[in-house]
Amino acid sequence: MATAKKLKIGVQMDPIESINPVGDSSFAMMLEAQARGHEVFYYLPATLALENNVVSAEVFPIKVMDDTKNWFELGAGQITDLSELDVILLRQDPPFDMNYITTTHLLERLHPKTLVVNAPEPVRNAPEKILVTEFPDLMPPTLVTRDRSRIVKFRETHGDIIVKPLFGNGGAGVFLLRENDQNLVSLLEMFEDSFPEPFMIQKYLPDVRKGDKRIIIIDGVPVAGLNRIPAEGEARSNMHVGGRPEFVELTPRDLEICAKIAPALKQRDFIFVGIDVIGDYITEINVTSPTGIREIKRFGGPDIAVLILDAIEKRR
Image (cartoon, rainbow, N blue to C red; front, side, top):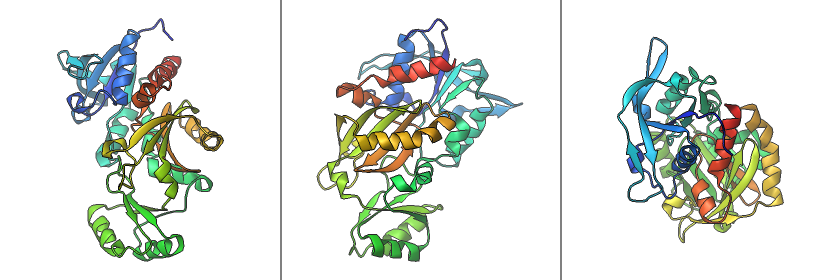
């Protein structure tokens, strides 16, 4: 859908030379914005600065091309007051650490005059493994704690469990421990040394062998699903660790889950959300930097970048 007003759209993201343009959702959004005639800019979160209540960064005009060997061209960078932009896409990958949190505090000075997608304050208050716990009836049995004795009792009750960092991403640090695995205490010692926060422990869902479904929700409405099948011998389904993606139709249970969480997403004005569903259960609500939209299009689903830009233009 075209718009009469041409927007200045900045993308706060990881180094663009390091992305895989074939599967990068930020890149897909940049391509769509450029195709609509908007001015697209790029900057790294490390260049963010706050001085005299002005939030700025070293901003580069960027041209993007759907070419795996030559996918971008940068213009000359200059320190820019980010309030001069109409829209900022908050797209750097987690981990959701103090650095990430600090960027949301800075961008909060700009929003909503400069529309930040997703909005920085709600993003800061809704890390994916915390927000989902507002819906315990939709989740597998879950425990968030550092208390070893509670974790041991949880495994005694539920058998096979998943142990993962509370603020990790991309499947990093996710462990499957069988009911009789003798490495639980050793693993918890390692987690205690590595992470200051509580950990997330969940009952293992055997349905993960059938896939971990990523469902994309735009403006509170589910639009497509991408099933990710774990590789042989791998408990994780993330695509960068070998998960095999396939486009799937959403089931009645998927739609029921989406309907139940929609009010919470709309209340926070989250435009672009990706939830993870295994079998009948939701495990995460991703609002920081959701992915999967290029794979969905490639495997026969809708062009979700179009829907995201439609939602942005509607607000501008």
